[in-house]
Length: 328
Image (cartoon, rainbow, N blue to C red; front, side, top):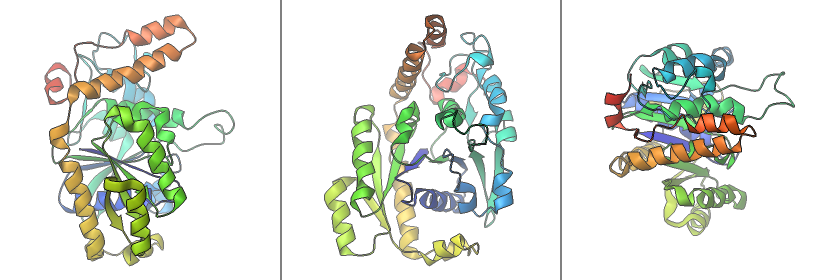
C-alpha cells in the first residue's frame, strides 16, 4: 500500500511520516520509506544522526543503474539513457517489490533499525553547490517517480513517501501514485490553504485525500478544521512529549508514544488498508501513460517526443498480474 504525506512547510508532514513508518514497522509489516523532499529530514526524524543521514545514498546519483535495471529487456526502450522519470513499464521491464532484494535497493536503500524493527530508507538528491541557480528540484525527484512507476506492492506491504512541501508535487505525475494521500494541516488559514489547492488539482485524478490535523490544541482548532475540510478530516494529532524528546536527540522507545497519538496512527493504517479494494490497475496505468505523453509532447524536438511516446506498451497494465509479463 502506497502512502504520501504532504502539507505546507512546517506543518509536521515529515514528523507524521516518521511516526507512521515507526507504527507500521512495530507491527512487523514490511516498510519502504522514501524521502522525496530535497530538504531531507526524514532520516533524522527516524533517529539517524547528522553523519548517518548525510551518508545515505542518493537515488539520483545512481540513476543510470536504476534505469538499466528497470529497463530489463523491454523492447520499446532502446537504451537506459532514453528513459525519463515518467517512462512506464512494459513487457520485459523489471518491477520492484517491497520484500524482494534487487540491485536498486542494494545501491540506493539502507536498512534503518527502529527499536529492533527494520525499514528500508531511500532518499532523493539534495541540492549541491553545482545545482544552485541552474537546476530545479524536480530534476532531483525524478528517480523516485521512476521507481514508483515500476513498483508492485501487495496488501500488508507499505511504501511511505515524505513529499515536497505545498502543492509542488503537482509538477509531476507522482501525486497519482498513491493509494492514499495524507495532507497534514495546522488549524490556521495558511494551514488549510494547501488543502484547498491540493483538493482542486487532484479532483479529476481519483486521488484519495485525507487530512491529518496537526498541532490541534482545543475545540476552536478542531472546529476550524472541520469547517474548512469537512469529511476529509480523518484524525487529529496533538502535543507529543515523545516527539519533543526525539527532536532533542533523545528518542524514547516508540512503545512510550502517547496512547492518543498511537490511536491516531492506527486510524491512518486502517484508512489506507481500506483502499486496497479500490485499486484500479487500468486507471493507475492510464494516468502513468497520460503524464508520459504530456512529457513527450512538451519536448521541443519532435523526434525526441515521438521516441518517448513509442515507449508506451498499450497492452501493459501495472498490477499483480503484470508480474507474469515482466522480469522481477
